[in-house]
Length: 88
Image 1 (cartoon, rainbow, N blue to C red):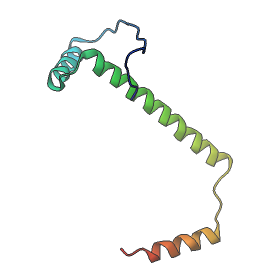
Image 2: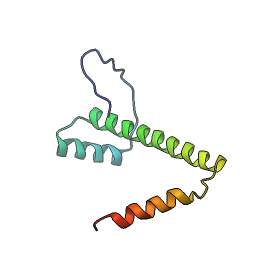
Image 3: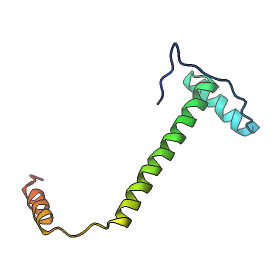
């Protein structure tokens, strides 16, 4: 999450919400002792972080499409030995 403190500029914006969403937001704010603004900021930050994570996943997938993983007998043998050596 982003941290806010002295020197961190903020700008005010208007967000229109349905009555149902606003009631749920107010209920959560009361239950957690946080402000509407704080909860909305957190929700936006989480949403944007998920988008960023999705972009990373997309790029990894695209990389494997461009260069498919090939079988590596040495790596597979070492992996099997490592798993067999585990004390479980």
